[in-house]
Each structure stands twice: as C-alpha cells, then as structure tokens.
Image (cartoon, rainbow, N blue to C red; front, side, top):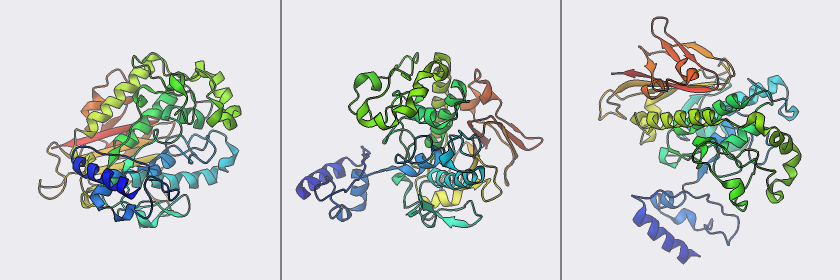
Length: 399
C-alpha cells in the first residue's frame, strides 16, 4: 500500500504544476487507499496535489443540513427562516432564524477561502477567527492555511445536484422561475468564492437526476444531460430503490408535480447565460482569485453581519491593493461589491462604508433580456443599492 502511495505521490509531484487533483480523503480503515498513518508524512505541496478535499461547509450552510439530515432542511440560499417550507423539524420561527444566522456564517467563511485565521463578526456579535467558530456543533468551521485548499461546491460530490436539492428544500409555493433563481444564487456562491470552485457537469443547464441521491449506478436514464437546454431531466421517473427507497414517499409528490416545477427551455437558457456571466465576473478581477491568506485578510470584508443583520443577505466587499506589489492588484477596479440576496423580496441598503460610487458589473449589465438582473442597480445620488430577490449582484467601482 505504501509503495503504491509513493508511486502515486511521485506522479502527483511531477504533474502538480499542471494538474489539480481532487480527492475525498477518507481513511476508514487500515486498508483505505490513503492510510491515516501515511498521509501526514507526505510533503505539504504533494499532499495538496494528491488530496485536495471538497469542502462541505459551503454546501451545508448554503443548501441546508447535511447528507445525513432530512432532505428538506433549508439553508441560506434555500430560504431558511426568510421563506420557510413548513418542515416542522426545523423548529419555530425563532429557532430557524438562529440557525440561519449561524449557517450564514458558514457561508461567509467559505466565501473567504475557509481560512482558519480569517476574522469576521459572527451571529452573536463577536469578532472570531474561522478556527474558533463551529461547524455542526463540534468541528472547527474553517481550518485552511491557503485559499487553494478551499475546494468549494454546492451540488457535486455527495448526493443530489443543485436543482434537485432546491426542489426538495424550497416550499411547494415556489414555482419554476423562483427555483431557477435559487439555483443561480447557489452557483454564484461557489463561483465567486476565494479558492477553487467545483461545479457539477450540467449545473449551468439546471441539470436534474430526478431526485436520485446517488446516481453512480443509475445509468444514462437518470444521468443524462441535454446539452441543447430543452429538458433538464426532472421527473423522468422515481429514482432507483438502492439509494432512494427510504425517501420515496417524500420524493413521489415532487416528481408527480414535475410539469409544475420543471424549467422551460427559456428559463434554462436564461440561467445558463447568468452562469456564464458569473464566470466572466470571476475572471474579470484578480480580487476573486487572491493567491494568499494575507491578501484575503487584508482586502476582503463582510458587511451586514452580527445580531442586527438583515437575515438572508450577505454583502462581500473586495478592495484592490493600492499598488501592484502591495497585495492583490486589480488594474481595472478599485472595489468590487457582491450582494447575495436569498430573500424572496428585493434588498435595499445604503452603500457600505468607504464606497465612492458603483455600477453594475458589465457582464451582468449585458444580460439585457433578464429583467430581474437589470433591476439590480446602484443609485449613486442616493447612495443606495437595489438587488432583486434570490439574486447575486456584482457592482464595481472602476479606476
């Protein structure tokens, strides 16, 4: 086993400059592929090349719960407390609000690269480093030393893709358009994070596996992707019993109402265009791809935090360094502001402290046929922002 690991390590070291390898580094027994006794002996950079594990903090905070909790558990993006789905196990309105604020902190630290030393104001008002906040009660929330260690995802790795998670977590009152918007918000949380975004194939087309929670052996019927964007594969049948039977009673009514919730080709095309705009935004500014923890700690700031925050809204501000050799330098923008509005109504707020003026990012402004995107505005006379429901909007202050 160890010889095999050393051989893999040699290959990884040789390819590390060109190939990024992702792996879920399970160590469940002495016979595991990556034995616990051996992993710590790998040099740090070789370890990164071999074992870059997907980070569940974003998924659990944004989408809600975990793979081991009821499938209708809600999170930041899926309406917890601000658009409840009626699931009694989520507790009272007050309990849901407390859970939402805590899970929103999970999302914030993931957006900031999952850095153990990054500090932010958390739900109870304290200024806390990521390693001193908690995840699912007994684990450190953030543990990374470098943003490249942050493999952030919402819909690939474990369980259902984003569309199917949204189907199970949103209330039955939310129609196809609103569900598609929540998918777009979930994509934005991943694409605009510091670190390594991890996107499931077909997410941009609102891909569904008809609620199959583990489609590894489900064949093409549940795994197919319509690259033409005419059908997202939702409602093609009850998923196989092997991994889904215990949830069949929950999933049957959703699948029976597939015609009500399945996105039209026009909605799929709109969301695909929004996803492409998010990619353009990420690569329009190095501030979304800061290379070191120090740059992130100096140049990333959250607003709307603590006990008085507006629930369901994250405001992320990125500052360019003042010179190219003093941090992450954006030659085009002094500042970038991202507002993630998970609420079912518009969000309005004053400009954050230190902002001079903003305009909607050109990649979003170019989506002329998307009325909800065009309603995201920065009023520089009144110094106020307006962000549409269930939407991530990006504003920039050009140089």
